[in-house]
Amino acid sequence: MDKKTLTLGEFIIGNQDSFQYTSGELSRLLNGLRLAAKVVNHEVNKAGLVDIIGAAGDTNIQGENQQKLDVMANEKFIQTLSKREIVCGIASEEEDDFISINSFDKQHQNKYIVLIDPLDGSSNIDVNVSVGTIFSIYRRITPVGTPVTIEDFLQPGRNQVAAGYIVYGTSTMLVYTTGDGVNGFTLNPALGTFYLSHPDMEFPENGKIYSVNEGNYIHFPQGVKDYIKYCQEEEDDRPYTSRYIGSLVSDFHRNMIKGGIYLYPKSSKASEGKLRLLYECNPMAFLAEQANGKASDGFNPIMDIKPKELHQRVPFFCGSKKMVEKAEEFMALRA
Ligand code: AHM
Ligand code: MG
Image (cartoon, rainbow, N blue to C red; front, side):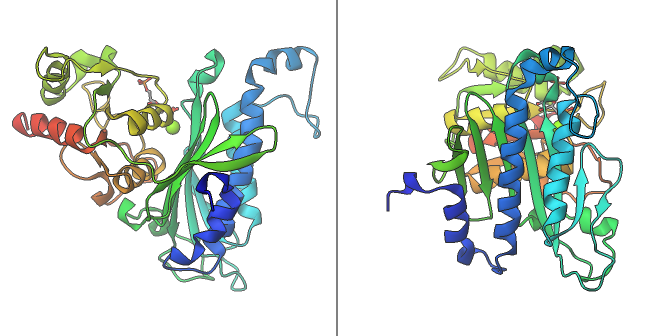
């Protein structure tokens, strides 16, 4: 069969057996995310109309005013995931605490924990620049039928069973891994169907793009400053090209296709950087490693970090293997 005619739904079912805990539940969970992604996509695409609709006094069915898109995306994903009897706990970048779903009920055998950043880079929405959703899936470590605890959420990234993102860009794509490579699916908006458009995605081993908010340069550690200067030097295949969308999903996606590195280091203004270990860095690190790339905090692999709290931040260096290794070399010299 021509792989490109495969829909996401068919692909999920077709690959169910390659997953080590095969039971169909993960497939149903991924299908839930697929559905929520379509709903959020529909809303994101109307973002420019919100004022017009709002001016007409539009309210939703419950009589509430138009919501902010990040709040709306959060609700859609939580609603969709809670309804399936698969997920026992959700933690979201938009929520202060984790949400327990029926996990106190002995009848329920729900095993999966989902961590989600429902709409990352949401400051880009107002200016019609692409944004994304990032998700990360674990199996709970406490017994089924008992309440989930914080320990279920604070697992190292190595324990992820699946992770992915949706990029709401010039086209909408869902990219995910269950630990057996990375595949990308593009939404045909006319049909509302995702098709396998990017099978077996891989970062080129080396690249020529560096993505960092250089406005923070003077606040960066010396190792990062040295690496940026290295990227800009006139030597061999350098200077590299600088590309920074300010939307992690989009910057990552471009770098995976073209070859590049994304950096969000710590700085004298933000002692642990900005990005969240559980909602942003771990899922992207899992995807990166599955796509032959690398993700580190500048010194050690992101996925080896034992999280201490839900909203923990961490410096993030992610992309083509050789580029991340080079950045780590510069960091080590100034450590
Ligand atoms: P958010 O979770 O508040 O949207 O922040 C995460 C975003 C990333 O998508 C992006 O790479 C980064 O913040 C940009 O931050 P900055 O504007 O500091 O460069
Ligand atoms: Mg975010």
